[in-house]
Image 1: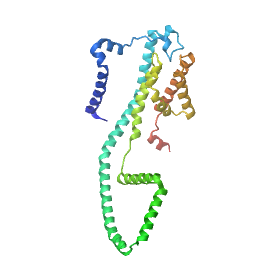
Image 2: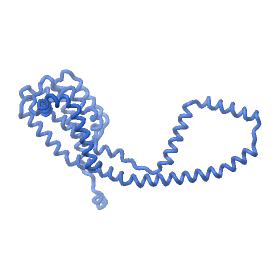
Image 3: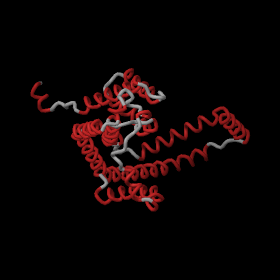
Image 4: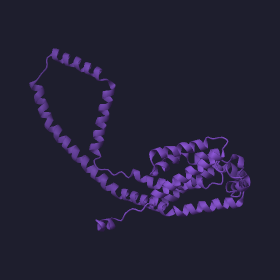
Length: 290
C-alpha cells in the first residue's frame, strides 16, 4: 500500500543498514564474507543440534537428508502461498480504503469543530449578561467571602491529587470525543500482514537442518501470536508454549526434547493450516438454502 517508489525507498533503507553493518568485512575480505553468509553446503555438528538429537550423526550430516528438508521447506511455502497472498491482498485493500476515506473523515471533523466553536460562542454571549446581572444583584459580604475561600481550601485538601488527575483525564477524553466524532480504525488489519510473515519464518524453523540454542530468538516472539491464531483450547495453547520452552531450555538436548519440539511444531502448523484453509460459506448459497 506504499506504492512502488516508497517501497523501493524502504528496501533501500534495509539494504543500506546491511551494507553499513557488513562494511568492515566487505572492505577487507568481501569474497570470504559473502561465501560464508550464503554457504548452503555448511555441515553442522550433531552435538549442538536441538531438533535432531534422535537421528544418527551419519543421517544428520547426509546431503540427501538436507535436500529432503529443503524440498519440504519449498513445498510448505507453496502450500501456504495462496492463503498468505489473500491475507496480504486484503490488507492492502483495507489500507487503500482507509486512505480513501481519511480525507472525508477529516473534512467532517473540521466541520464539526466549526459548529462546536459557533455554539460555544453563542452560549458564552448569552451567559455574559446573565452573569453580570447576578453579580450586580448578589454581592457577598467580607465574612461570606472568607468563609467560601476557607471552604474551598478544605475541599481541595480532601479531594487530593488523584481526583484532580481523574477530572483532567475525563475532560481530555470528553474533548477528544467531541472533536473526533468521526474516525476509522483499521489497526487490526495489520494482523493480515503479520500472520504470513510469522508463518513463513516459522516454516523455515520447522524445516531447518539444525537448530542451535541461540536460534530460539528467531521465532520466540512470534510463538504466542501463532499459538493464539489457532482454534485450540487455552489449556492446549499454554501447554504448547510450555513444552517449547522446556525443549529450548534442556541442555544438552535429548531424544525426548527433540521429539517434543517437532511434535509441538507439527501441532502448531496443523492448527494454523486448518484455520487458514477453512472455507468461508458463500452468502448466495446460504440464502438459497434458507
